[in-house]
Length: 350
Image 1 (cartoon, rainbow, N blue to C red):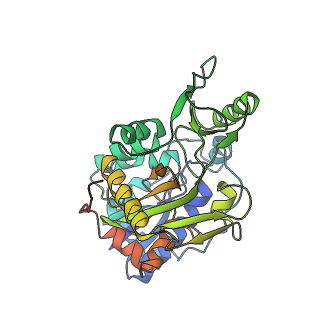
Image 2: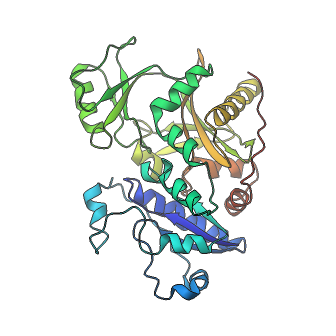
């Protein structure tokens, strides 16, 4: 197939997305597809739009990219485009996507995962991987997704939402320590732990750099896991063991910071229950094609942290490691994703 891999974009996670996009593009080429990497925000300086299919042949294979620790601001990203425009879609992006058989969304962060890109592609009848605009928006907004989890009796941390314009934090029915995170965002950007009111105020101030609303969640201790789903099938879970500190942006994407164990060292019944909860969460949030559910497990049970409609596909990302543990190579995983837009759920009642 002719496949556009969309990466980059305007998100603070832009560099992570480019790393995923490069690896995805090369994997799809290995499987025989005409895959081309396109930066959503910077676009492509295509000169001859009358023969746009040639772009799938002329683009050289992209080179692997080392992820920078820098979290990009809007101002820094805006400077990358020299024509002064600020629209999410760069030059010729939509035209090239329309010429493809399918678009593989290698995007990360709010503007890639909140449904905006998906809605534009739907408007122009362009096929793409992952969930639709509604599901993407619900999952990206942690407040909405948590309310859906509560309504469907799926365990998750209690929380209060705080607006940037609120004079004070609403009353909490849980105590310190707490977890503070932007309502919409990913890769632990803007996330902090707070042990008292002073730390809470400082954490909120930083979270508000990335969003106009933040969640203050009760702290849940326990072992941390993630579990991917591809075309209705739950992959083996993976345990995340941080060598020092916690699973922040640096630990997610830099070598030798975290130890990953898959399949996880769990009793079979607990592992199966985690898979069942992941599938139920996937369906409750109306996700499709593929995704990832994150968990904490302790003596009180299995708690969903959050879901992810476009899981990372970098060399250190969780979903590819789980696939390998299930006998699925990285190129085969990418091929299954582009060929599996019709999802058959394998939900168990819990």
